[in-house]
Length: 182
Image (cartoon, rainbow, N blue to C red; front, side, top):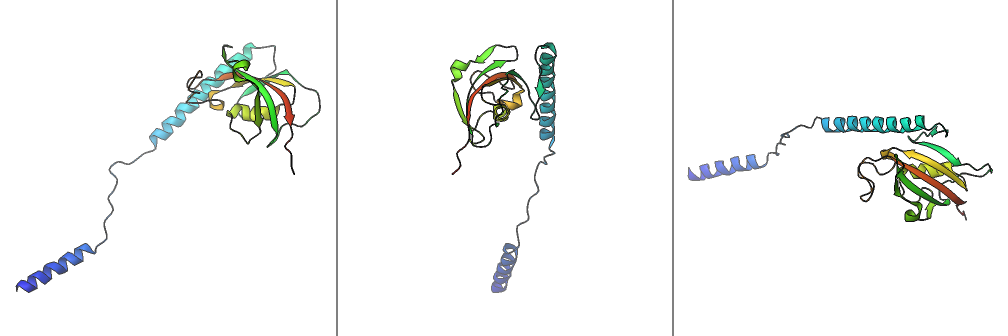
């Protein structure tokens, strides 16, 4: 009788231990509302910055602004009439630039930033400059009005540019060297 009881207990234990674990259901279910709210906040921020930039453009009757397909506005301060290629992937562009607030206060001067050498799409620079430089020829100067999502965005640059700050960039391209292909 004791052996039957022991065998029975062992059989029950083996049967129960061989069953697959049943997965637990999550305690909380994510509705995705945080993501939706974030998208709405960003849409409102972009609309606010675009309205500010458009009001600046409206007040500036001396310059003809061009709306880029990338979400910023610009005008030529100095335009080259020389027929030449625009910079493409791998080309070396030598330029300098200055960053200002939309109120025209200098954030970073050309002297602070110094002359830059940029290999198109091979180096990491702010998004607005990445696409803006591709619009320029040598010896041109363009004034760009960038919304914050085209420059330093939510984080700022952790120095002088704070969170969600749109900027004015004054960019001068000095030379463009075509990538050498061998």
